[in-house]
Length: 230
Image: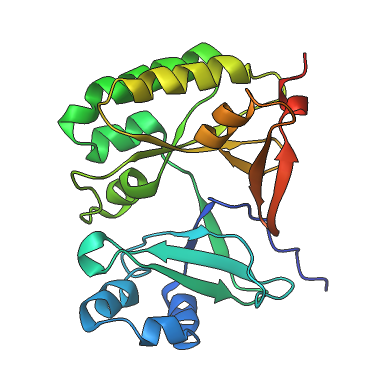
């Protein structure tokens, strides 16, 4: 019998792993073994509490079929990003990412409210549902203390070929200029590549502008003019 093909994951996908497979991944990780006791205890119980990990960009040591994962730790545990790898054939359940509105309701500081509402309105205006990322995402998913006075509001904007990128970027700049919270995050293109919104905003005004595109298998400079072609 042919084994079903493993699902194809993209950067920023959230996946949940069975505790036994999680323990096996930790046992192979030198980085996990090097963590301080407190951080190691939190990570060891991660799957038991059904917390997801995030799919990261594939590294040079990640062979074919490997599912590369990351677990960002909260600031009190060193604000490290632990990298793990699942071998081919390991079951990994994709978890739906919370929308900005859901994550904000669960974990955002009250002071962020006007910015979160403005960004949700922007998403509705341009037809893109922003997804939470970064500290807000992990605070909402885990209940752990990821947010602090210096935290940014990280978002992912999965656009389509029909999205008005000028309108989206103009709106992001307006909300960022309010000074409520620094707006961070990526524009996710239909092919899965992620572009930092600030870099894209700057590059669109430059002759022959280009921006670093982050994809599952690496990074590369990409000209931005085709993205804004009518």
